[in-house]
Length: 189
Image (tube, rainbow, N blue to C red):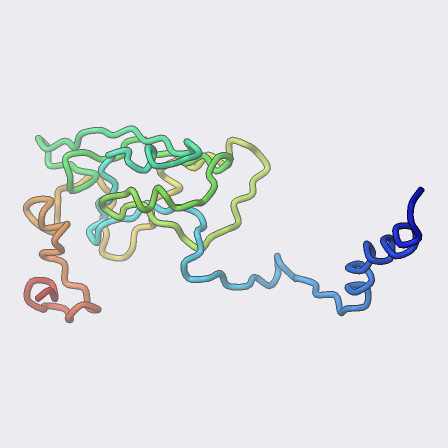
């Protein structure tokens, strides 16, 4: 037989949260029409970055795929064609096939930490819904950063230096934010 406390007080205490929130003002999010900005370090959709001349930063090392706990990344590396001077990246290799399956991806950022060239970063874009499963497997073409003014669509020869060392040491790159255009050694001391 239940006690008096269990019969009368416990149901009232159980509905306590309901009663407390019943008379508070309702907050309605106008999401599709009014989007709130995300935090600066928000982990959203991935992006494959480019060098200032348009070459891809991805060297096809597949470290991002190995670091992914959800096995959501697939990378196939290939060798650059040095005989014709046609390159996709400044290194020996480039990512010929690059796919991220957002049905599996948990947006943890471990792939970003594993990338040795900072080729893979995460944007603040969070609207990843789609009406088909195939639409959530992003190919390299949709992951690559757009070409900015002054960039050239790969494949093409290296424009920022004679070897990949010039790219990684920022020799020949003169960003305005690091010391001004024309600063010696690209603004590095």
